[in-house]
Image 1 (cartoon, rainbow, N blue to C red):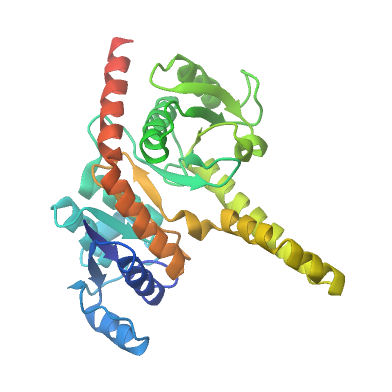
Image 2: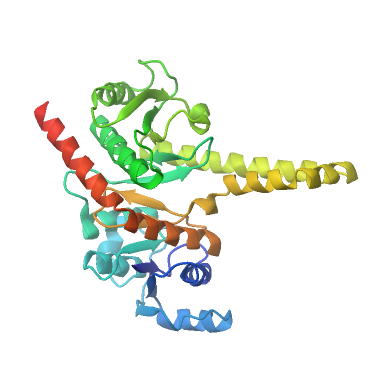
Length: 336
């Protein structure tokens, strides 16, 4: 297993990315290709005592910022760590690519350089979220506007992902909406709901309200990228607020601190389950090879888990399952 890593992408790059790679290397047998500014990587590795002597470094001179236009970077920053890494993946010089950089640039670069799987009209970012049981949110931020057909295809890809990665034989698929009734939502939601009910490739359970998503309403929650990203950020904020409030309440006096000690194990388990860094990165489903988007603010722990997710994704054969599901979906559409 050979993992290509964008060392310069993300708010805390390259230090936290470097620490994440070193940590991941200690837990798996994969080899790593570090793509970024060689001098800077060697300087930081020396300064913070990170042993990178066993890693291959591919030097690049430019960096894609979070403000860069996704299309413009493909033309103007071909020597960036992200574009170089994606091209290496496309050329077969690695088995997976991980980046915490500009989401739009990563999505566009993956679609145009690594290419979509045959039969996939639009790739999408899938993010696994905590709940009564983990569930997949799809799309989590790539496609701001979509069609009902794309939402149906997201459902098919998401279902294939949960089958392969979580061993769920028949994942329950829901459509994120503002109510569970059949006629709820915009005309797009009404059309998508109708299409999903007719789709033979999935087990569709209907419209799902945001308040029910974490309580086992479905295994795959389908939506457009704008709504999905707002839902994701709101959930992250709510979880952070809840943990902060609990810490504040349990620190008020000696009695509350004693109570915290009694519930220490349960509180630690709760914090672990709600910690976004534990869930690694988000795969871009529908791309021919594994491309994993780590959170832009990833620390070493989060990036390590994103790398381990990339390895698991590559080894699981989920890309082949999605490819088969996409072709079957395309064939069923041709029959209609």
